[in-house]
Length: 590
Image (cartoon, rainbow, N blue to C red; front, side, top):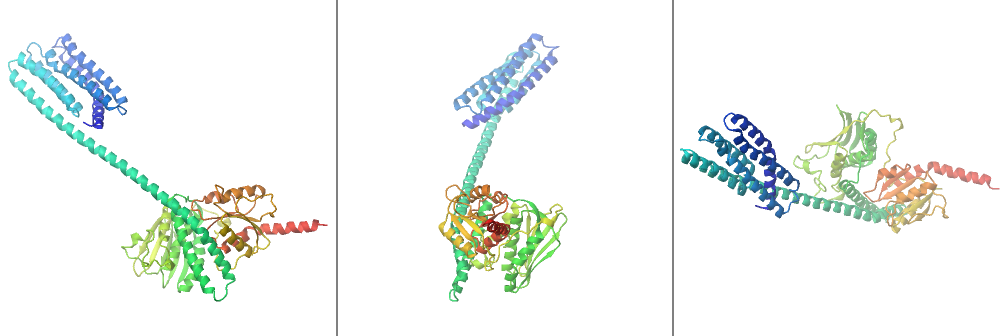
């Protein structure tokens, strides 16, 4: 018997011995009451008292055994087995003498009843101790031999009854061994299953840690790779303004390649953020029609170039969701619909359901075969793009949509047939009644080719530890008319640089410092200072940054016109204040 099998056998026998104490005591009281008028009291007491005392002692010893059983060593388990073995022998001797105490004076009826009591006790002992044959079998034979010796010496029918008792002993011995074997097999399977579950849990933990490490590496690598990409896009934008006709095509190719890389990195970063738990929804009342209409307007030119239409229809609806994550879901679905629609059009339809708001993105494209529909939400899977043409996307858009819908607790449904188009349906939770009077539309990225907003007269403080990115950003802001003062670390508040109108800072700086720390220090001197945090870090806490107020988080690579437009809007009041300040200084100057 193995150590764990012995431990479990002791546990089962000890628990059953504790429970059987009450049964033995009640049976002894009933027997004394039944035989009180026939058997002398001293005989009943001589039989019942040892039986009851042994049952009590056995229960006490078993309770003590259970308290330290889990920590018991093999030697201690062996001692426990010995104690229970002697207690079993003592109990069986006490019960084996039942027929001698009660069946006196050759009273066959009393002897038969007493022997029956012994057999009943043996049946209970078989249930209790069958998991350990070395304990049960010797005790059972002691009990039966004491009864057989009575019948052989005190009655004329001794031999047949003694033979019957011996046969009963053989049956019980065999039954005990079979029960012990079954118990051992069940324990073996139990331990094997427990060990298997433990190994699976360990392997799952290792796999999860490896996946998390992969995601962290992907996030870190993508962040580092986006630094030169950010600089490339900024420089290509500047080059576009000074290009000659001979370089126009080359610049267009550079911008196209950089844009494709930007989309690929953006998808990878989004996936890494979702896998590492770096995205926490900020639920609020959202005017879903406003988001849909802005996206449709954004894709109008692309649809017009393809000869297809795009429209937003339905009734105004407010939903409870995260506006930024919901915008990303709709953007990916609309972008996917536009790419795969060659004729007809794309429609975003919004309507109120019985208990939810339904948002459908419909297209008249090629449709999706039923056998491919379960796979379209897999990473890098694309229908009809085996050549991996990046102009058709990276294959991450719908994978991100599925994860975002799960994060937002939004049901996503798909209906499509080859040649009949595709419909993606979102079932969104309806928001409480919401006053839209003060609701503003979320900012959107401008067209990279659009004319930038002028920043003349503004002093911008730039904090960026990457020299290449710092140079590119500085050149871009100066090209927009701003006066730029740049540092790679915390700028001196009392230094020679003029008071800033806005701060542009990278989130992850040298060492453990961040752009958020820089912003907080500068806000101590200039509480209303507009702050733009530029980052390629997927794990940034956007909510903490935006709680500062008058703060925006821009993901690298940042298109200069996007940054310029935000600075132009954020510094309108400050530009007027600066002009007023200078005018006052001019008036006060003698």
